[in-house]
Image 1 (cartoon, rainbow, N blue to C red):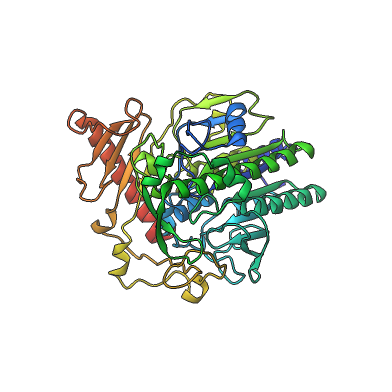
Image 2 (cartoon, one colour):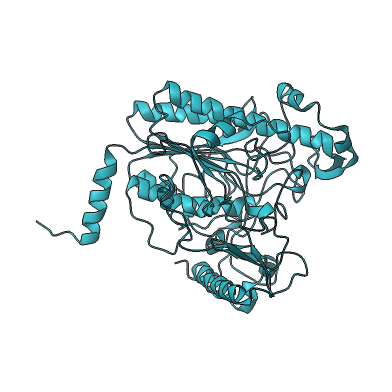
Length: 495
């Protein structure tokens, strides 16, 4: 008999331990849904009874972060367990890179049936795209290249897009329910990723949801905000009161759809053995900013741009309500799920860690810091870089309201980076350890020396401790630089 290595034996044992109780796994994510926009976090108007119940009965992650202050990069972090700059997903509409190892590929190879529903935004979802959900391990998908509102136009498994009548969040939840039911009939564990198009602007709500917010203060109308016109797809300016009413209606509709999914799990007898993880993909945009207790908003590496709601339910393993103040990030999802299922991590640099010890409260301090970095994409236009993917394969097909570059579809990009130099370290960036956060170039004209905050004492990032705590700043500055070097090495070598 051929001898097995210690590593192989360990993997086999891990797989055997989990084979009999591999849980169903559902990852839910709101689009532009910030930390404060839940009832349980104290928003003065929004109605989110389902998320509030999840936070009250499951594992509430009070210090949960998106890996980036915008959407496409954060999604790449979930799929890969890595900071998005490692694979060139620098900003919205920058695709993921073929060759990345995805959580869906890992779970598929472990016997799961994997489905994606809703916003993809890591490349086109069409059949010939090398970065569509199927190429990243999902056997089924009903997805959009970007975001969507009521009556969404979606592509099923890469086919030509088709309009589906209904409220957008409910449409993709209904599809996820059908997927889960089929997996149960096939006696297969399921992995469902449900990425909502709400509450991203432009906003559009059902009459019954809009009516819930008819009594917003009249004074809100004095403020004007910029956003996309729902009819033309072009920029417009409207009273904040009207915009907020529509935004909150979208959040409530999304919340209700999540409730429908949870109730289906309960009726089907799947609730206890299903892990449900909800989060946002970045902070609140300017068009929805109201009660944010933090500095900044979407697009900034201050807390308001990257701190998002995070909740995990798994009644069989998280048996009592728990609130965690340990720093956690979307890159942690892949390592956490790998440990739960009992499969080894991909053999490449990861930025996330497993959070399974949060389930019983035994993890009280994060063992490594979290890095945030908005790569300076202006550098890309100054170089003649080779596209990672032929440009025709990067053209999206699913239409959306918002126009960009004179069209209602999206074009993606990703480039080969053969080397890097000092300029590549630029861009707003931050590093967060258990207590302190160093922000460098966080705002236009910011100092390269950075700003230092103790988030435990100053979550609003009002008091810069750079002068009074120089040794902490120096330590974090070195850690940030070393981490950036690791990220750039991944970017240029394709690991």
